[in-house]
Image 1 (cartoon, protein in one colour):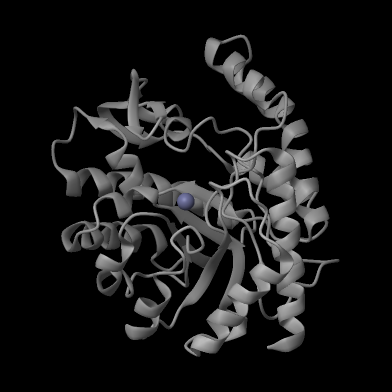
Image 2 (image 1 turned 60 degrees about the horizontal axis):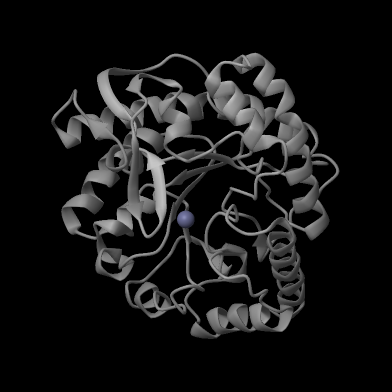
Length: 331
Ligand SMILES: [Zn+2]
């Protein structure tokens, strides 16, 4: 990418979502109610995307996202755009998080691009920085939908994987170099069979793909399935670590971790802004464990930043970028 040189070590990035910037929520509601066509929505959502991109650039992030300004939610957004789904009713998924769990009523089919246009726009204003192509993974789509059609989880996850692969192929054809599949649901069922089911689906998604392949997994008892995920066909695991007090690191070392690591160093559930010194300390701690080189470490937040106030989200990104810069001088 012209005009921007990505650092060779301790690259900084984000998991993807960013606080909704007005009028993004209003536009999403108007699109759903039919007040805006998809085409009008796409045009107007560029305002919030450009603000999210600007914040990331100002904070010093190397590999940015479009801030997921178009997505009210990581499952509903795709369910609304994949044939075979219909909208569901509000249900509680965990804590006080509710969403409209979509329902699979027919054969699932990719019919149109879902995230490509936002990615192209973000790339056009990123001043040369790579923009990650980020899509919800097949395991999470499956777990957070009601299936009234397939009745077979393996068949369903493979169908979802094919749809996701189709979208990713569109992105890569447009020049996307970093592809991330988000799988927060995996850690809610941390069992070997589940981990292996996702592996089959990831084979469909990533086989022969000419781009950096990333899977983001967060929260839950991930240590229980680490041995079964380490051979996933990905270049990088992007993991939440700060919130669980870096509990996973000794397991990664023990199992001979040899991929790149998206190293979650700021807690997205806390309003407290981690200082540069604190974050630098987390990077030093990882380096001192001596199982991964600095060129394989991508410093980032634990998870999407969407639930934080914008000023807090931006401050956390700025501090992690500053800490990464200091770490580059030392390691
Ligand atoms: Zn996450």
